[in-house]
Image 1: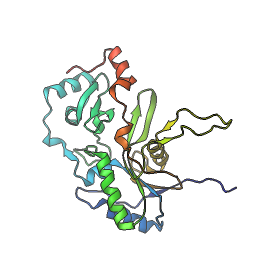
Image 2 (image 1 turned 90 degrees about the vertical axis):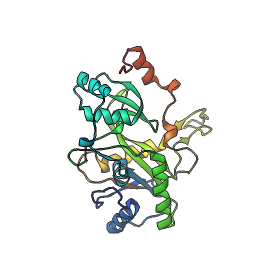
Image 3 (image 1 turned 45 degrees about the vertical axis):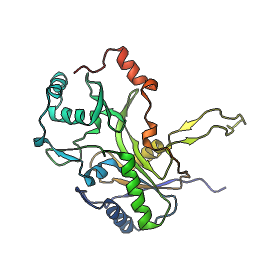
Amino acid sequence: MTPITVVAVALDSIPIIKPGDPLVSIILEAVEESGFNLNEGDIFVISSKIVSKSEGRIVKACSIIPSREAKGIAERNGFDPTHVELALRESVEVISSKGVLITETHSGLICNFSGVDRSNAPDGEYVLLPKNPDQSAERILRDLRKETDLNLGVILVDSQGRPWRKGLVNVAIGCAGINAFKYNKGKPDLHGRILKRSTVCQIDELAAFAEPLMGQAGEGVPVVIIRGYEFADGSENAGDVNRPKEEDLFRQQTEKRGEWAQS
């Protein structure tokens, strides 16, 4: 029996990305330099940070004047007022501002500081998340398919924490060419029982699979190619992974503890 193998390959020759850089051309040049030949079904797992940089989602701290609300949250928690202000601008709702700044972004993500980050950004600058990660993934996939004539998948990832577990992990914030979920409903288990429900967020699984190669510091590996994972395209994207408010237990528990943000 041939063992089932899924392989992750790091592209470590991608330069520092600047606003306006042709990201897909740069990625494909790195593929060529690596000697790796692309195949049908390869999945590109791409750090959202280089996508943001190429899209010009970079802000200079000196251009930001913190609001009264931002100053208040920063003072209560020992945060940087500029960082708080950018997080507020990138959010539609502040969920908790006690010891953390958990927000809902315009694209529906629930995360700390709206994903606004200073790591791997030049001094005095902040990197924002892509404005619409799923649309960004679609554009990248379209250009990859045009240049390679291959059926590929694209997943944009960001490092985030989880409400009930410590530590950061890569999660998918955008995808294209690959469905967000896979479904095991109707399949038999090891004992022949038919599964009545089993929905797996396969784009988060693949995001986490790529993270050990990508790292979260100065590793300089913003793109990983995954090969050997069977997947199907579909209408679901990363935005569909976000739970609606009525199903969000984190929000419910925050409300019960009285931590709902008050500006």
